[in-house]
Length: 317
Image 1 (tube, rainbow, N blue to C red):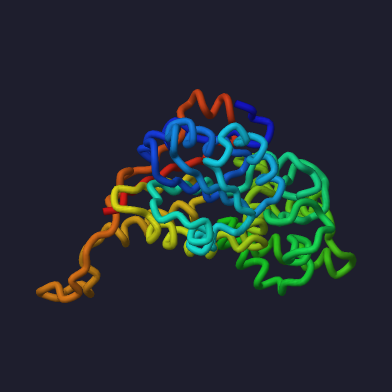
Image 2 (spheres, helix red, strand yellow; image 1 turned 180 degrees about the vertical axis):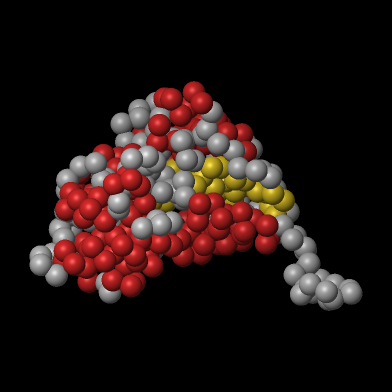
């Protein structure tokens, strides 16, 4: 399999947990370069159908090349996965047996300097997943947020989405710097972050800019609210016996997944303390993974970017 675009994480585990079988429709909500989708299509031969969704037109182009051998068994849609219900309805399929989310930024997006996702390469401060290349028309960029948001809002984003302990200090340093000139590149932002974080705190742990970049990317792409909407839609679309898998790389994404699965796996939704259930609720999901599955040591050594991946799965009643 070609892996020039993005190496699929936890591929064997995903195929197993989705319980892929011939027939039916599977939805890859983050098709990327088509790695997971290819595995699903191979396992569901000869008549399984796959809907691949990605908001990045470059990912759709890569998936189209990767999945060309499967012909009419594939339908690729360039759209935000928050619209999963409308997308699936537009394709005209109502036999959904599996849904996959592989969240976060792809290796290809990280490695393309003009996308502005990486703190390791000096590039325009973009970070838009749905727009291929800086300077394209579209939503607000990371540069827009960094230069225009009030310092208090910037600190909140860095603290909540990046879980960065130095969020207020980083935001203050950004505010002071942008008062003199706009912050336009990833390199400029990295330099500011390094100045903001005390030297002692930079000697260990991840790259000092990692959490801030992660926070800005999440904010630029409205990732968390889009995922919450898509996850609920995916659960509604599943046929009885169908399964859903989520690979997350961030504690907030994993928390949303865990909380949502637990909510739909709970039969009674009455307030605590009522002597008798009055809601008549029924559980919609059975949680398959009580604890998230993580990559093996071998996979991490072969693909270091898989290190923080967590996989959760559930089955529709």
